[in-house]
Image (cartoon, rainbow, N blue to C red; front, side):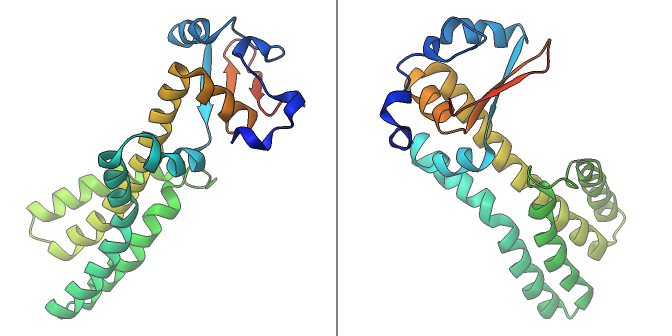
Length: 195
């Protein structure tokens, strides 16, 4: 990431950032702990870096979360054919709808979180009342939504925490425009790269 910056604009310290709301990274962590500032990291970058930055165990976990909706879609087709219950084919659509709605860049996805919570409750209720088809359909939607949501948010939180403890990583992300600071009191945001 650092190579994309012109040599004259490379930063060597957080204190080099103009109008930065903290003296250094330690001060930034203190301000964040007091909720005076918040740190935002690009979701796509967090997912991309998760495979190399957090170890192979996390990479496998993140990959499973990413593939789960596709596996659910395939399982819906197989189960519908095996049980001759073609209503279960709707599980394919619902399994693929979950990741679309859980994507943090989707403007209509945010209110869907409530619907995904209701889908979990509905799946459990229908399972206990013997309405298996409805339980499976709602479960496919809920599981695909929440696996995608967890993947995005867990990867972002890990990258955010790592950036707060590693100044080189923080500066690389900031200079590449993949990390920003929001000042709580004013609502002002500061995103790289530096112009």
